[in-house]
Length: 402
Ligand code: NAD
Ligand code: MG
Image (cartoon, rainbow, N blue to C red; front, side):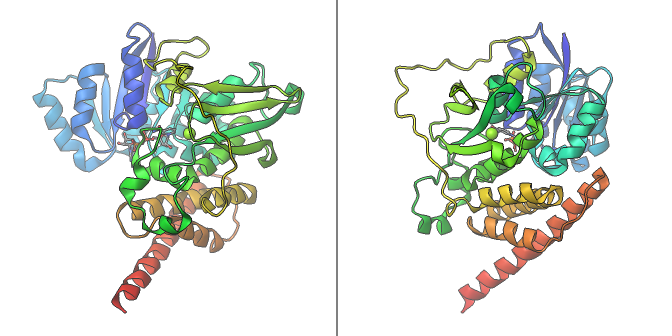
């Protein structure tokens, strides 16, 4: 029986994780569940999973959560705040930590799990984008096992040789990693119409049902950019080892090309329960609840190159990845505030890339060799990003006024 903490239980990945866990009550028990502020859903999940602890990250929700849990006669302990997140991520009773908080908020609790030598199921790609080298060094030093949940990285992991050594592509006979992406909901929209797309249109992904931040990132393809950086750190790759391929059907989740001409692909219906079940049970396999592919229904597999003009965020992420850790940390933070501003209607869709680009241009290279430095750099980029957003909204209001 393996004991699991789910960081970000109330999100899209968290809910899929609980769905898989509930299919295997003899294999897994839930130690702790966390939410930012959705205490009602956390209560329902606790009623289903009987954890020992629940944590609400937002301390303002602490009293409401305690009251709700005691009214409903739940005996689990209710904790609040970011220290509590770290406490339950590194607790000695825990074997597996699902890192499924969205954004930079996931960095510190995920790192605690890594430093406690846990089996870490990594959905929170932002933590690796922000702290790459430090994260991988900590995983090696503390013997943490990092298993990718992102469907592309999970697919690559499944297609690599089982004895693959970090960064050693050529000795494994590998010529290329093919990172697939759907292109999002605006793949075929005339470029001139991108100015007017709304948050709801951006969040309506054609194949995947995800949280709002990653949905917008999929529409701008910043998500693929973050995944490009994530893949480099996870498998020890150079930029030239990776090719991004558009595959709008989202059935192939990524591929590994070998020097003899073979290409191994991992396929399946677009449902995150597959990579979650894979990582939970690894190296065994368990049932996930995902329906098998019906090959009679699969036609029209297409593969194209992403257009640079349509996806400037993808290009920015690749450039940042080559510029170094300061640039990917800056880009990640700028993008988080820009996506938030877009979701709140403060800037337009195409201005997300403008904020990101200006933020990168206005940031000088600096060393990030401690987590404190990473967090400082993240905070500085957020402040800068918010300033740029303020200027953009002001100038669009002036335009409306004239
Ligand atoms: P989501 O928005 O649906 O859920 C986010 C979770 O994080 C929620 O439980 C929320 O309460 C919690 N949270 C948000 N802000 C927090 C904060 N400040 N402090 C503590 N907790 C906080 O997001 P999601 O779609 O489930 O994505 C989670 C992570 O997984 C992201 O990093 C995303 O990039 C990655 N991911 C998601 C998918 C997917 O299909 N949804 C696929 C691949 C990778
Ligand atoms: Mg992905």
